[in-house]
Amino acid sequence: MKILCVLYDDPVSGMPESYARDDLPKLDKYPDGMSLPSPSSVDFTPGQLLGCVSGELGLRKFLEDAGHTLVVTSDKDGEGCTADKELIDSDIVISQPFWPYYLTRKRIESAPNLKMAITAGIGSDHVDLQAAMDHKVDVVEVTYCNSRSVAEHIVMMILSMVRDYHNQHSIAKSGGWNIADAVKRSYDVEGMHIGTVAAGRIGLDALRKMKPFDTHLHYFDRHRLPESVEKELGLTFHDNVESMVKVCDVVTINCPLHPETEHLFNDDLIGKMKKGAYIVNTARGKICDKDAIARALESGQLSGYAGDVWFPQPAPNDHVWRTMPHNGMTPHTSGTSLSAQARYAAGVREILECFFEGTSIREPYLIVQNGQLAGMGAHSYSKGSATAGSEEAAKYKK
Image 1 (cartoon, rainbow, N blue to C red):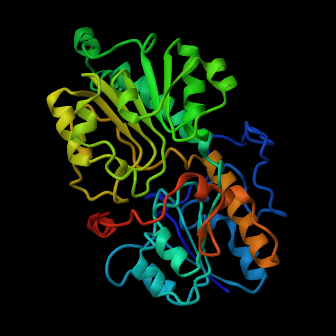
Image 2: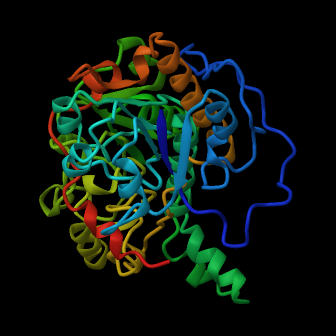
């Protein structure tokens, strides 16, 4: 079989000759008891770069020893890109949320041999799920592999925005020492009301991590948490997102992107938030109207916006989120720490082993199977597609 793997570029300076740390902490299972990915073996060193082109997710030896063909590229956007040329006769395509190869209906229909799309990470909205269902292309992802990595990123962003860390660091780095300038937008997070849109693995973990800061915790989700969890964390449940954003100082977005959540945070919803609130978005960029966010920062309706996700990805060089005031944007890195890469690379190999052996893929990994939403897909997604506009990614210039 032919496997197409679309990964982000290598470091500008080339692959590292050494790494900052020699090892990773050993983890055996996720907080809910689910075991970490468990392939028969791996051909990589955990803690090294695996998610870029030269890293190849550690798959080449495994696949070529089994007689398969592996093609790895980062060239994924624009007319005549390498990924489009290689997709035509591919059986499996692997992509990442951080450097997504947007599997639109047109692309899926150009690949008659395509059997499965694997997300090396979590979040498969870069695939036209409706087209995948229509053409019986299974969609799977490595559920939970980087959820805690993202939750840590959320905590970092909340604290750095509320304390105005970026401004303070900039003053120190530039040789300054004006304390008043450094603290004129700096507050304590203690006592603030913090709410998450969706309290799945990432959202709930973020709330759990914020509890020791003596904050008031809120959540909106279409699936209510068990009463025992609400009591343990002192959570306030809201049955609609408007109710929650009205009372929160910080809102963190952790829901999947699908037609029902596209542009959820628009001028209207942002206008219902507390004046001077903060938004952290590590879910998907398209959940927010990019221009509405910029307008709210300009007007002071929002005090800050920290995002790890953009639409499309990579974001065009002139994307408004690069230059809007009081932003704490990062390129999509929250879920691709070196620690997370080891887990999602192992998960991809586990999925491939199951596929080649004809054994069942873990149910939580499933998004689409046999033409229907399945597993985590049935729990988290709705039918349809959220890939419209993805062609804008071709405007990014390295």
